Length: 251
Image (cartoon, rainbow, N blue to C red; front, side):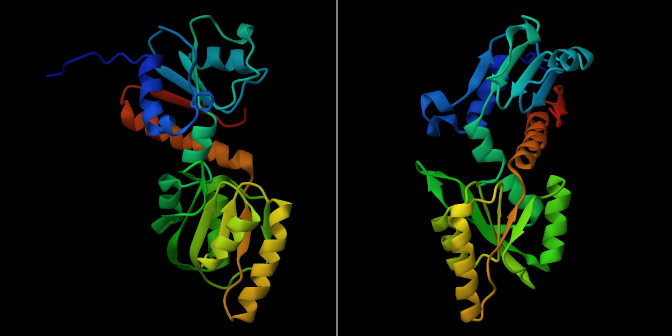
């Protein structure tokens, strides 16, 4: 016997995501939520990073009822039919589903014993934890499989990796903290040049102490966002068995 309605509306999805992204931790202008309201029933939801010239065609051919847009600011009114609703989350999405304190990513990386590494306005922006003992080549292969590639590697490659950090920023202080807390590898989106001196100095210090130097893997900001979209699709499918979610990865 079933009770209640199986209908899903844009406000329902926004209410769920407000909780999932813990938007109360953010200032009003950073919270996100409903960007273009709609009362249309949502059976098929499209997820994409930003609008493109092909958006209208994609929405039509995929028979979508609503959209999740990570960066909606270039959306033009004529790109969508009036009843297509849009929800958008920018900073909360980045901090929950990309390089941050991200338990879903930690799980696929095999991390355990998670601890916060770095904070911004009392919110965690990174994590550090143990991984099964593995070669650096094995970890790189895993990162490549998860994200579909990576951009750069900095400093000496450790012979053995047992502890890694994943952080949504790369500063001098964060690099030094990761090294001091025993991380062998620092995974982030973009390599930041102001932090390179810290990478080199921690390398020299580690070698002098007979320890493994810290290596940085810069995956690429956009690769992290695309992974986040795929993770979000899984979250939404877990919440609603009847919701069909379509991800546009090459928007």
